Each structure stands twice: as structure tokens, then as C-alpha cells.
Amino acid sequence: MSNYSIKTISENYKMTAFGVELEDYNDWAGNAAKTAAKKAEITENGKLAELLALADGQEYQINYVLGGKAWRGFGVMGEFEAEGAIVLNFLAGDYIVVPGTGADKNRLADEITGKVFSGLLEEIKDYKYVGPGNSTFVKAADNGEFYGEMWLRAKRVEG
Image (cartoon, rainbow, N blue to C red; front, side):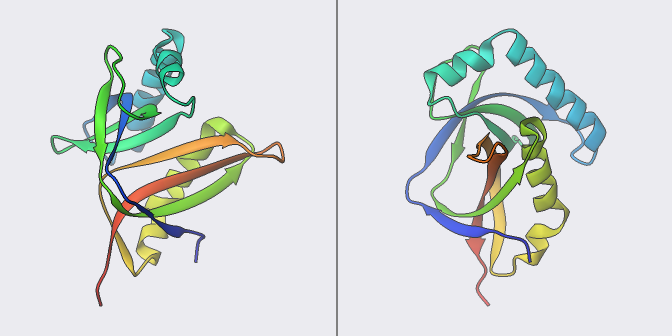
């Protein structure tokens, strides 16, 4: 059984992000390319740095469902005005928290996401992921590696 915990968030919160709509959620290679292109664009034009400066400096990779379509982006905790960014609502409640560590900061969020959606969620019997979104952050750890967590809103399964 993989490592995870359940944490409770007592109040709704918002995240502000730049992202892309994904037409086919199962097109892993195409979605990765679209996501990487958006990340490169907002890094090169300074929009991500601008958003990070408005918030606490912690970047999140965010997966969300908007209007029935999958969406992936990069943003910050909180509600901010930034041209081209959208504000996403995250609801209070229980969250499945999945930690991970690795040497490559740029790959760790995707590695944790892959672990969660390629089997971990099926292993968790007492909670079910309900969305509408999830977020992952990565930061430097004390040992020279990187530490990250994915947070997914979940409901307790009665049974």
C-alpha cells in the first residue's frame, strides 16, 4: 500500500492559474505536450513569475474539470487579478494527500500524479476522489532532493 494521509480543510479556498483545456483526457502524450507548451509560454513571458510574486511564491500544478472538460495549469494559492488567469474554487472537506520525493523538480509533480492515477486511488478503500480538481506542489527538501504533495478532495466511503 502506497503512502498517503487524509487531511481536512475547514474552509473553501481558491487558486489562480494559467492553463489549457485538454480535449481527450486519455491522450497522455498530447496533453503533456500542451501542458509543457503552456508552462514554457507563461515562464518566458513572465506571467507565472508575476503570479508567484502576488502570492506566497509556491507554484502548484493543477488539474481541474471546467465545463465538463479536463483542464491543466500552473498557479498559486489564493485569488488574484492576473491577465489571462482564471480563479478556481476548491471546496472544504477531506483531502487525500499523497507525498513524493525525487531528484528532478520538474518531473516530480508528474511522477506523483502518475502514481495516484495509475493505481493508488484503487488501493484506497475508505475514501473516493470526488474532485472537481486536485493540486500538486513541489519544493526543495533539506537533503538536496525535492518534496511534493498531491491533494485530492475525497469523500469517506460508508460501508
